[in-house]
Length: 431
Ligand SMILES: *[C@@H]1O[C@H](CO)[C@@H](O)[C@H](O)[C@H]1NC(C)=O
Ligand SMILES: *[C@@H]1O[C@H](CO)[C@@H](O)[C@H](O)[C@H]1NC(C)=O
Ligand SMILES: *[C@@H]1O[C@H](CO)[C@@H](O)[C@H](O)[C@H]1NC(C)=O
Ligand SMILES: *[C@@H]1O[C@H](CO)[C@@H](O)[C@H](O)[C@H]1NC(C)=O
Image (cartoon, rainbow, N blue to C red; front, side, top):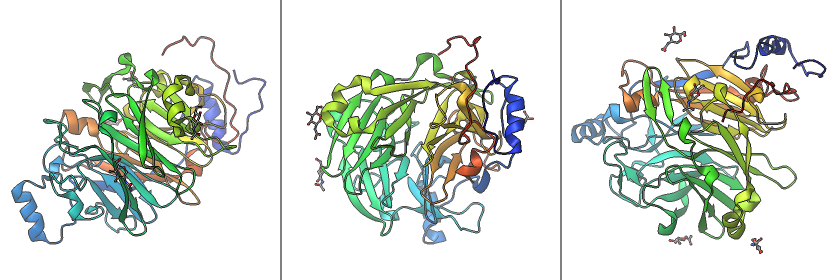
């Protein structure tokens, strides 16, 4: 399969990789290089209260229950790291928080964002539960508030789901949009958002409905939204059983990981996958921008291919300016990649950036930042143990890791110019 093709071998590590690659794509092709660097790690999460008396009072009243808090989503902007904390159980004092990236502490306390006033329980003017968020190229933070709390208990929807946009220069709210009732279904859960900037004025945001399999397109300039549905937003029922670290669970989550491609010749694609699926899809964003076309063009959703068994189920993902898609492989404790400029989406084209059952135990969210020299950022959080077993408060459970994207692709099939080996003939047509 490797014969007769010119391979681009920019450095010695690629030789090692090819040697491993000859044994078949099922061997773990981890490049021989330094992996992701740990930036922060936490056992129990703490918050930066104005005083220790205020913290004690919050604990006493049950507003702050340290072991109920587990970060899930992340974003990075200049010197700030943002994390989200869904209200899984009672006792999360703030669902959106930040820490300075240059903090000298390993486990810094979290600062509520934008302030404590936004995190008053039951106050729908503030923020109830955020899963994931997005920073755009205009220095704005896009937040989707599900409006739900006590998610593992009674799943109470206290407030209407809404989009909030903050100016990161001033930390002031610049847009607030409640999703219209007819776009929200019984049992809907909105967990992800990505902003598609044509210009800072003409900007769209895409929001996923992970439980009712829909996509909301929000048009900022005209302050309106539409709901797009497509069978390709559904999960695959046979991929809904998860087995990891001795725990078994079922998730029937649909349309989920969002990433936007660079603009190429006026075209830009929204990449996505269902959580419980091995497949990857994309949609031309110009179709999404037009309500009529978005809601009447089911064929605009394009199947790219499948990661198949070895690169199974993926969660958060993000694409860099060079068209490299980075994604988390939750059941492999790994971060994977695929270079959209290198050709087709096949198992052979997927690379592994790093793997670790300690630092990447349940890699949950992943973002590529906006710096001139881009880095990939990963949040791992042992979510399966938090949900279905118990976290050890004396161990580190949540970690933030990072690496330059240029280094991350080195020695993997995501390196620019890598030629994907021809498909294996023995490969059966597994889903
Ligand atoms: C945007 O639309 C929503 C709902 O239709 C409305 O409540 C809100 O006031 C509008 N915002 C602006 C800035 O016009
Ligand atoms: C949206 O698409 C429809 C159908 O293709 C077209 O008739 C309409 O002009 C488009 N609207 C805008 C604003 O481009
Ligand atoms: C997830 O991927 C792993 C391989 O990495 C595979 O063994 C497992 O069956 C997959 N699970 C699902 C639910 O697809
Ligand atoms: C990580 O994997 C190694 C090698 O497979 C194993 O010995 C170790 O127990 C694992 N550690 C954890 C925390 O699961």
